[in-house]
Length: 538
Ligand SMILES: *Cc1c(COP(=O)(O)O)cnc(C)c1O
Image (tube, rainbow, N blue to C red; front, top):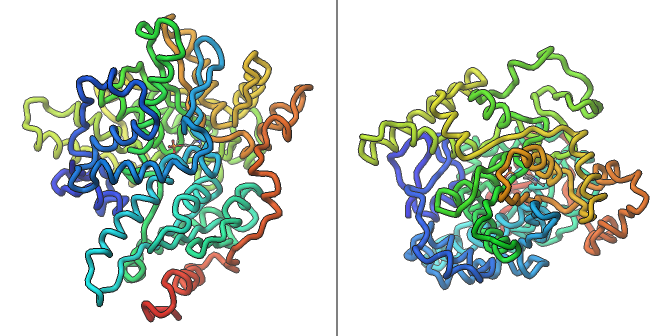
């Protein structure tokens, strides 16, 4: 299996090259040359498989055995998910007859990003170790310096994915004092020698700008071999396809009359990674209805499914350009900050554009392209279309896709936008229901979208809502939603043992006094390479 860029279908990479590269040099995202189909007997052969067994089966369809054998893959997967607290890794829980929750937060940082980043860290380590084992005694070992900016969630999941990994250093920039105390503690209490937290005096945007500039600095990039773990990395999408299969089988076991049931997955969405993984599962042949895309007030995707316009700023919004104070609005029209991002109660979904959406657009363009053409030309035509659309988004802030493309998108997905107020109401609704379920605000966005469409579903539909974070990670929103519920007690009902005492634990963090790239470079130069190996430090 080889991979090519959504913006140019002429160069093909191995899985290893794809994973180490992250983003394609032309700005596109890597996709597999073909979406593999499932083995004929998958439904019977896989039905009792564990998460690990399914990972091996699904992943091996996308990775040539010459690159990673099934035995090696199993070892990698077992190691990756040994850090999870639940025996099912991603358990399925019933809320009511028609609604199930797929809990993705049983990994080390209590957020769904662990599912992908635990595997990605081990893949990086595996590739580097193999490359270094092939080197002669006088050759320098290959290393990777992972650099990223975070406003909370991604940083800790990346740190836990890469802590203690051979030949890899990780530098995570966060805006000092501007991430939640729990999230800051989750990151900075990891004291492994290869983990470096940089508390930058500045905003999240400052941190992100610095990281972008570092990647753009060819010389620095080449010296330190910078690597990214952001959500466009193909390995992250791939790892996430597995729980769609697992929950399919788990639901079959839990519902009566399983053969007649149609599954509808509903996914709280930011960068479109999680729900895209579901789309790959669907294309591979996993039976399901339309996938639900649930957004918060950052609703570029919900607007796309309404109008076929993919645009950063809502051109139909009333009073464009007006900007009320961030975070204060409670009427469902949350205000946007200078960049256009709206601050919501589900911050991990606060995005302006959804980077992985380009992958879906490619498939839509491909299906819309002339059927008569041969495979290669059809792929090239799709990539040319994507290059064109994306350059329009860059220059004009928007692109309008043809009606036929929008219809294709509607065939496989629906989308719903959920306000902060609805998010709080939904948390309360499920806590007060018979299930007494406490949902985190991201999960609540999914649950609310699911409820909105439930009435229009055929009667035999069962909804599986993906739960992306443990409620204790977003205590403010959860407490705000449930403060009036007499039986609610945050410490007793929500707070996991692992979070107790976290704030008091030993921390390791490097203070960066100003949001200046040179200060960050100095930190990386000082810590990235063990002393004596390369004389590049200042
Ligand atoms: C990252 C994240 C999301 C959004 O996932 P995407 O793959 O970017 O759509 C949702 N919820 C939580 C808690 C997250 O951390």
